[in-house]
Structures are given as C-alpha cells and as structure tokens.
Image (cartoon, rainbow, N blue to C red; front, top):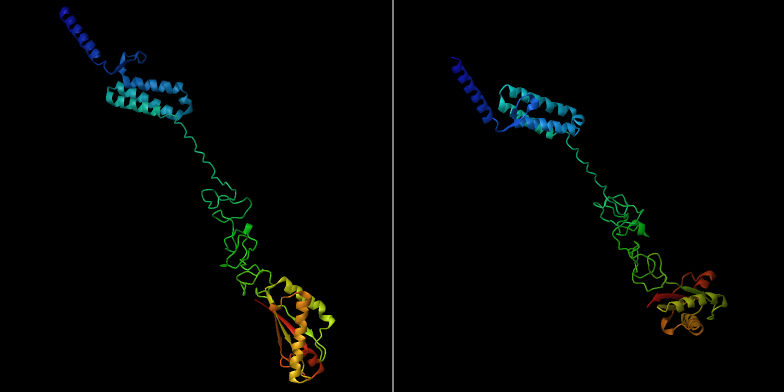
Length: 317
C-alpha cells in the first residue's frame, strides 16, 4: 500500500516539474518576487519604473510616475489571479506610460523681429522703397511722401505745391522750357528767346520810350538823353529786339508840314541810336504820322504838347 502511494507522489512531482520547465519560455527569473519565474513583460515594467526613478522622473513627474507604478501593481495582482494575458497587456501599458514620463518641453521658437533696413518704420518685407534716407516721412509702402503727386518726393521737392498733372524737373519744379522764369503751364509765350524780359505770362514786356518835342522843333532835348541811353543799352544787350520809331505832331500847322516835321523828329531819334550807340540801322524802322495819330485833344495847349512826340516801340525778330 505504501509503495503504491509513493509511486503516485513521485509521478505527480515529475509532472509538476515538467509543467514548470515547459512554461519557462517567455518568462524571467524573479526571486525578488518570491517566485522563480514570471512573464518577462512584468519584469520589463519593473525595470522601466526603476530606471525612471533613478533618472529622477518620480520627483519630476510624481503624478504620472505614481499612476504607472499603480498600474504595474495592478498588473501583478491580475497575474496572480491567473489572468496572464490581461496582466501582460497592463505591463506593456506601464512601459508605455514610463516612456512618456516628463516629456521634454518644446524649445520655444524665437522669431527674429522683421528687418527694417532703412529704419523708416516699414519692415523690409513690406517696404517698396527699401533705401529711403533716414528721417524721411514715408507712406504705408515705405516710400517717401509726394504730397503734390508730381513724382518727386517731398524731401527732394523744391516746389512742393505744383498743380497735379504738370511736368516737373528733377527738383520737382514745373518745367520752364524757354528759361524765362515762367513755368510752362503758365507761359503764354513758351518760346521766348533767352534773356528777354517777360511779364507774368511769359511774354516779352515790350519796353518803350516816349520823347516830347517843343513846338515846330525836331531836336531831341537834353533831358531825354539819360532815358535814350538806358534804352540803347537794352538794345545792345538784346540784339534780337527790333525797334519802330514813330514820329508825331500836333495839329498847329498844315498836314504836309506836320508830316515832314514828324519824319524829322523820328529820324533825329534814329540818328542818336545809330551814331551814338551803334545800334544796327537794320533793327530800326522809322515811321511818321504827322497829326493823324494824336493821344490827346489838339484843342488845348496841354493836349498839343502830348501830341508833339516820338514813340519808340519794341518787338522781337
């Protein structure tokens, strides 16, 4: 009877040892757990937690670390209840949680401030005029202001109020093609020769001279010589100017006599210009009108005095 019981006990022991040996595949030695072997996934979870603690993650991320550790403990509890696959799944989840502990904070991206190379307050990516000089007022596109819209920036514009639509030069001033000082858009005589005096419409001022004579006389009185000299100097300076000398009389004598007297008066003035001031005779036209061109009434002595005259008129060739 005793021999038969011993055989059965030995068989059972062999069967148990065989079962343990067969089950060691995928398992690890775990004497610290009070057992010889457990599945490797649980041991990996233990190792992951130990390494995390050693790395300081238990202190750095205590909540997450404790959660992973609790899950590891639960995995063992499940394992001891023979729910092996469920426990292995938990162990893998523990490892995943440990690997995710204390993630590195992303390095903040420091974006460089947009460049404004010319310092005009408009960044280079928006600046259509990137080389504006310092201190110059600019618009939203970074270009210098042009208040009168003439294409010349205000800081360079010497004529900042030019009417819109008129041609200007590099200084922002209306063009003056004939250089007479009157802008083209105001110039009614745009081809005036250089140096000729003009009025505010850009036209020749047509200087003139008036010389009065005594009754029945054709001699030029000395008092008029300064005016004649000044007029002659103008003619010398402007050879493009021509002269018309017009002789006149009052109505005191006959028409024939007055016509001849007016001629002699005009020729007297012509002689002074030609002989004393070397004015080319080709520039001078002489006309005489007798008593037919009065500027005042011949019924009074005062009127007659005004009509005894020579008018010197100018024009351009």
